[in-house]
Amino acid sequence: MTQEELNQIRALLQEQETRITEKMQEQETRITEKMQEQETRITENLTQSLTKRIEEGENSLIEMIQDVHKDLDEKIRASETRINIKIENDITKRMDSLFDGYKLTHEMQWQMRDDYDKRIESLEQRISALEMQVG
Image 1 (cartoon, rainbow, N blue to C red):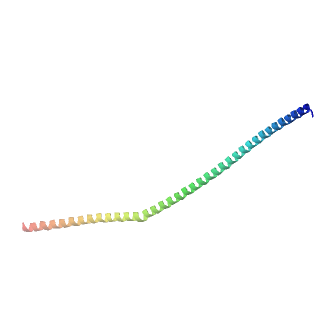
Image 2: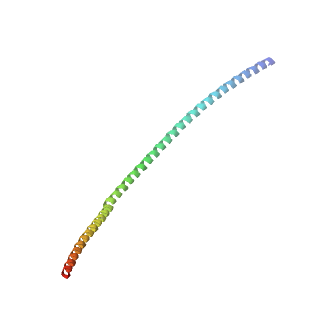
Image 3: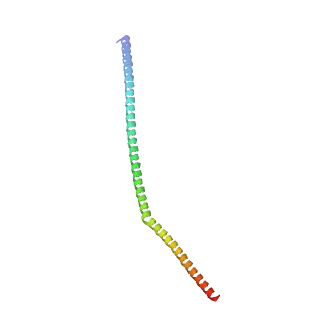
């Protein structure tokens, strides 16, 4: 083999090496792009999945809060009912009894006043009669 043939072989090998390097770079670029696309899709899918889970969790929490609120409302209403019944049954009766007692006491005071007035009038009449006898 001559020097010229060797140079031609070298030139062919360099061309082949350049083509292979270019094709490898093209393949690397395509692979990088595909990996970026897959990474973007995976990120979007994860974001959607996490968003969905967060929304489900929020909805679940909202439902739980509403249930607790509903239970508290029911308990408050039940307590109000018990308090109203207690007021009607116990306190109202006691107040009526106290009012009746005050009314009876007031009536008795008027009756006693009338009785004292009659006694005083009777005593005054007796005194007047005795004064007339004496005088």
